[in-house]
Each structure stands twice: as structure tokens, then as C-alpha cells.
Image (tube, rainbow, N blue to C red; front, side, top):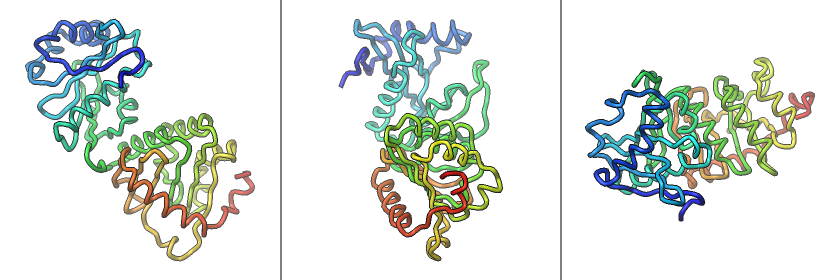
Length: 302
């Protein structure tokens, strides 16, 4: 279905070079000062290219898939930024990769664009690096099945994405509010946005240890204190629940992040894992019903 105001097309490189140039050179060469000889490379003729066009057919955005199974040359003209063109281009490229049977896809994101790609389920891996004078971060995601989460940076990226993806409900099963994750500034900002923008939204949190977050002055608690109609906490009391070693977050849009060992960041996540997300939510609901309100938080009004 065409997106209002613009459309996305797969194009032949030989026939569309001038149109690709009309977007990539203003963005990369003129705005970002990438040398012209570095902007056009030997991979271009081998890539699958997509173009975003406005209603008159003029090119306003580009992107490509390389034989190395990477997304690249994502660019949107200045006047069209913030209007969903980049999201549509990225979604189109991922759909093309999926149709070609690629199990996974990667990209080198400009550091300023990391949050954009994280919203689509990409997680960082490896150290940052410089390319064409601009700092970059390698990112990847699986297209068929969950993406492995291997470090704190990836955990923060996917948690933020899951909060942003949620419609009206988030469930979090945590040992002690996951220091290094739920106290991260990006995650907190996403939770704040969800709590203030999602009409009738709710965040339910199950904890095994309620004292540790208070001792650590976890910043999620003051946020929940200001928005008690959105955030609710319970503590597990049954021996089987207290012995549960895992931790997870799941939303009502089919996304989840599961860690087999709750005190570690490594695990698996999927923004399109509706079946697994539903399973986690149902399990959460059963534990929630037998858990007790967090009496330790009553003084905070939570």
C-alpha cells in the first residue's frame, strides 16, 4: 500500500543512477563532506537499490542491499526528514532481504543514527570505528527468528526498541530492576514517553528483590512515583517464583527480550516474535496473580 505523500520502489542501478545521485550527493557529499570518490564504489552495480519518490515521482530517499548482506547508503533529502521516509526505506530493504532468503542483515550506522536503527530491531556489535571521517557502529538483526543479545549496549538498544514498539502494555520480570539496563537514560526516556503518551497504558513489573532498588536509588522508582496510574509493582513470594533464574520484557506488539540468566545481559530478542511474546505474557500473568503488592514501595505512593 502506498504511503501517503511518497512511495518506495526497487530500481535498476543502470537506469536509476541519476536519481540515486540526486539524493546521495546532496546528503553525503555536500552535507556530510564525504569525498565523491568514496561515495560511489564498485559495489553499487552489484547491489539492489530502492528509491523513495514524492507524489510527482521525484527521488527523495535511497538505500541499498549489498552482496555482503548489508544495508547501506540510506539517505533522505533534508526537506523530507522526520516524515517516515527513512522508516519506509529501511522496512522495504528488510522485506527485500527476507524475500531473498537472507537469515540476517547488518549495517554500519552513523553513531547519530543508532537509535533509528535500534527502533527496527538492530543491535550494536563490536567496537565503533571511523568511516569517511564519520564515527560508525556496526549493527545487525536476524530476519528469521530471534536476534542474539550479547552485551549491555545491545541490551539497552533492544529494550528501548521494545518500549517504543509497545502499544498499551509492557510486562517486566526482573530480579532487582536490572542495574545497567532499566536505569539507562535511553530506556528511561522511552518509558517516560510510553507512560505519558500511551492512553490507558500500563507497565507491570515483577520483582524478586524489592530492597535492592531502593538502596541503589534506582531512577525508575521516582518515575513510577510520578505516574502511579501507569506503573505497578509486585513481589514474588512463592518458592518456585523466587527460584526462577530468568528475566524478560514483553510488549503487546509481539516483541520480547528474554534472558535465561536474569543477572546477565545476554539473551535473545525479537520485535516480531508474537508467539513467544504471548507465551511470556501469559506466564507473567499467572505469577502476577499470586504475587504480593510491594509494601516497601507504598511510602513512595506506588
